[in-house]
Length: 282
Image (cartoon, rainbow, N blue to C red; front, side, top):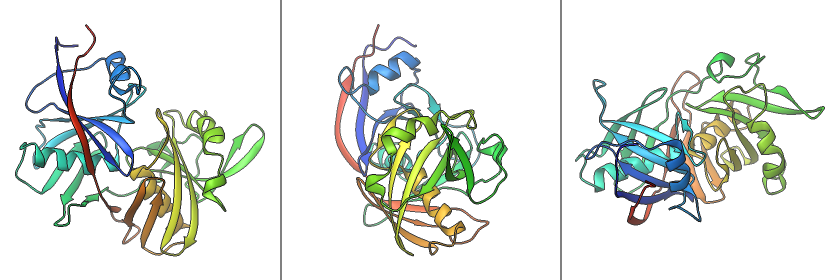
């Protein structure tokens, strides 16, 4: 880690999915996995689900590089709630005067637009179903596939929204085994890079309720890519229309998948809670 005596940060959240946002454009630095774990710790650090880092990019037609680190210190490919927060952060901190940003993530480029009402719309890119792209060992690309857990089979839909998801449809999401079953799905041998476990209750064709066990984090109040994965699952299973209101434990998102070959679009709020200075470990 580069010598840092202090590191400014901004604490933000998207429907309770909370982040520490760091400016790597104005100042170049790196953080070790150990430092990231300490930063995200809710008793010994600032505390958050993920650290978001905005950096310069050399990719043509792209405004910034957008990196995401879970609170276990591992880097992941995408975070939808984080993308909304990062766009607002860049605009309000003077890193850009654009209200529409193209962001380079690990798996490609996404676009985030700050709307007139303050909400942020994100082109999340298209979902991916090929087992090698999730990755999901032994997957068949079927809409619903069995996953063995301790000798019992659960029905999941496996897909990637820039990170891997295993979505289940449940009768009552409040009673879903998120905290008991989720950790075992996250680390299941058929998901060699881990997976986010999503649970979806269909209220009607335009409304769902969801809960998430996020890879490397645990249960979160909201998950943007998880909400998109749930809507895509519901549409593929002929349970939902193309525009859906998604109720998370932290609030509401709107997710649309206009056609099977195109991008998923997500819209929702952000909030800045506080700013501060963090002193990294020596």
